[in-house]
Length: 448
Image (tube, rainbow, N blue to C red):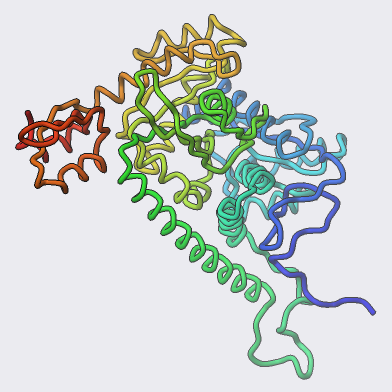
């Protein structure tokens, strides 16, 4: 007997492959039995916005890397010149017809656009092209779905996917509708599209509640870290800049390292001893990228909160890449979006082993930046010395005499500062402690 039940909008797709659909609550990964053939499409804005031809080509190069990471092959690229995107088909109906002919000639499975498509544009393009039409956001979401490993990561990725899919739900025809035109079918009813939309909305609310619970747990962990005298450092940067490699070199963290975009999504924190003997907590975070989907930033906000709580950001830049300054601007844009733009930042230009001249030149342009190789360790000692100096500059080393009957003050010093030395005296305990400048004033009456 054939199964006439309507498809479940949360089911994992069982088609032959591709990243045009996303897994639901039962899986975030997509099974592939072949590598899709992809054409990527970009637009040069003739009105002066968008950075011109060179910026468009760089963005398409990066989109090609994203497609390769997602498990497909780019067979060609198309660039359209327009003053503004066409509201119906993004590239215009004539160009879309040319693109359809090219797809048929090259036996292309999917077309991926470098900019976000509206649900209407996507539907019109798929109808004109006769194949899937996706945008950059869909590819990034698919890569995140492949790489999510922790429970929190999977919840965050699924939430971002469902928020992306919800406005793009389309009806599957009258055969799947509870409304009809024959005897016994008239009257109040509900289309399958409405059922799917309601189920997705309900699932989104469930995931948002799950993430709220995870955020509360992370808040408890942050309170425990705030009670610790250890300073916190967050490693941020563009995807594939070498953040995880640097953390592994510094702390033997054992974080997965691959030469691919978004290889690691989960934050990892390790303790690091600085040259002066101080200890700090170092956290590796998810990588950023140009045109990072806003839904991903929102979904990963609980993970990115560790960046907002850091005392210093180590901003790792691929100094041997084609556009270090563009990558720096993209990362700072995301930092501003999550409210971390005011945290002190130290630029670290990585991959000096690949192109020492380019990396050294890039570091010289930015005062206070250092050039390193996270693979060989070149320049890491200088980086740690600079890191320690910047953390010390944000704190004060003071000597206090705490009366014997003020034990709560001693406890507060251990909670809010780094106690360097303690020795008993006649008037009380003599303490040498390093405190944040804002905290030092609270203990002014005990200064020796």
